[in-house]
Length: 305
Image 1 (cartoon, helix red, strand yellow):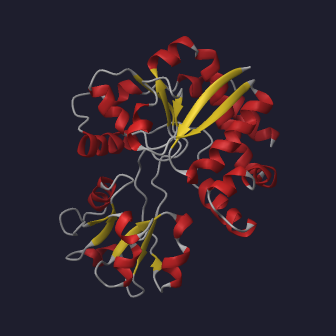
Image 2: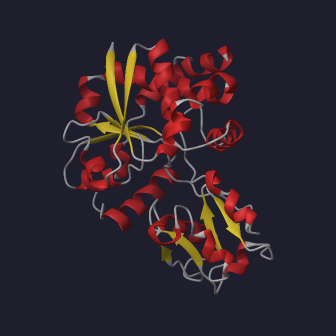
């Protein structure tokens, strides 16, 4: 049995990772070794010091590594939207009301994406984007600046909506930004070159895991309610199910990136990591996804569900 070491930082990724792991073990002869590497520096070094084979969490920094000469392969993109909810004060009815005011921006998780979203909405340069650190307001606590009236809105992970809604804020439906988001995966070009069959089977497990979550929810929840739920510090199955639904809602069964999502992610990488000077398309190799798609594997998995 082949082993693929998959590294991540944030325990919120655990439901998807563990479903991939389960499908890899059951069907594709792969033991997915799940590695949490919390320290930013250690995580960003993991592919290059042989600590991990695949990264599945916040991989934008790899564009900057490629600009320095490292050989990277991005090979699937299960989510191509930010997938965040826009939280506003109760009286706000449309994004046009943001002009002349400020949005509270989280310090981690690609803050430049807020500027890209404002650009998409025709509001770039018209709305302030002060950054508030989690260390100061709590994890995903930027909503407190909205509740206080200091800011008019902020983006929130749906997993953390309960508190702001309880505080009297609301979700304002708005268009989402196309971007390579959570669960995008990358390895070194050397790993992809030396182990193409292993990587193809691993991509099968990724797709199968996503389908399992979407179409066999009860079965998938039996795995998610174990170690992932414990790691996420969730106390009830009902809460875990809500988190599960929020995650699954944004996953795509055929994990192709789009040019728009790659372009937005590359701009973020340039702004936040200094990744200028490369062609971002050169880092992407989706031939494993395309082969599986062309062979009817993906449609076959869906039918089997």
